[in-house]
Every structure is written in C-alpha cells, then in structure tokens.
Amino acid sequence: MPTKEEDFKQRFAGVLLDMRSAATDDPEGMWLVGSLAARIIDEAKQPSWTVFKERISRTNWSALLTTFQNQGNALAKQGAQRQVFAVQVLAASMVAKTQTKDPDIASGDKILSDIIDDAITVFRDTQAADPIIS
Image (cartoon, rainbow, N blue to C red; front, side, top):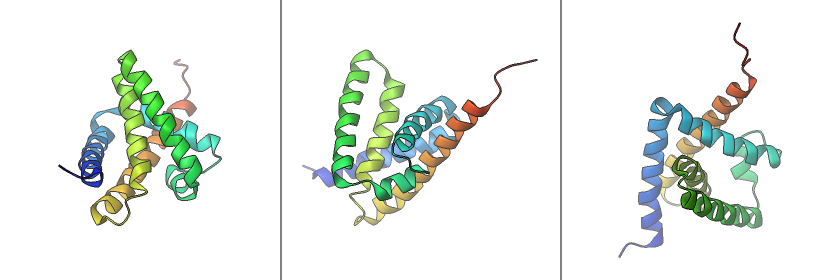
C-alpha cells in the first residue's frame, strides 16, 4: 500500500501533466485556474501565486486547504468538473509546498507555480480586454 506521500506524488504528477496540457490546449481551464488563484492572491494582497505560497502562514495554509476541500466537494456534487479541476490544481500546489524534500515534487512545484502565475496573467488579460466590438 503506497504511503500518503507516494500517493500525493502520483496525483501531483497527474496535475502537473494536466496543467502543462491546459497551458496550450485548454484556455478555459487556464482561465478558471487563473481566476481562482487571482482572487486568492488579491485577497492576500500578494503579487503572485509563487510569492503567496512563500509567505502564507501554516495556519492560513491549513485553512485554505480546508476551504479547497469543502469547495471542491460542493462543486463535485453540482457536477462542476472544470471548477473542481481548478480547485484541485491550487490545492496540489499548496500541498507540494510541504513536500520540498522530494526533488521531483520540488522541481514540479516550481513549474506548476509558474503555470499558475501564467494562468493569473491570462485571466487578468481577459478582464482588461475591451469587450466592445466596433
């Protein structure tokens, strides 16, 4: 039976693969991840997901994971799979922060944080675009 760390490592690898794919093939998925991440970092008054993760306290980290779990479960009951995916990506990123002794997770965490920061940019760029077509 795999340990919880081994189980997370497998799940994390899947999330990272999905996000790498979404970066080129799923603009809506990237937008959803960026939307949720932007709301979180804006509320925390942090400039990026990467900085947010570096600065979050253990208490706030734990509270955020509980919120992710509750929201993810509620969204899953509603059948909102794309939104569940966004929650799972950010939750995996937060858990990866605690697994830095594993070199595979540590390197993947950097990549995933960069992708999330890019997703925030995608979201914000769509918000700044002029929606009026002349």
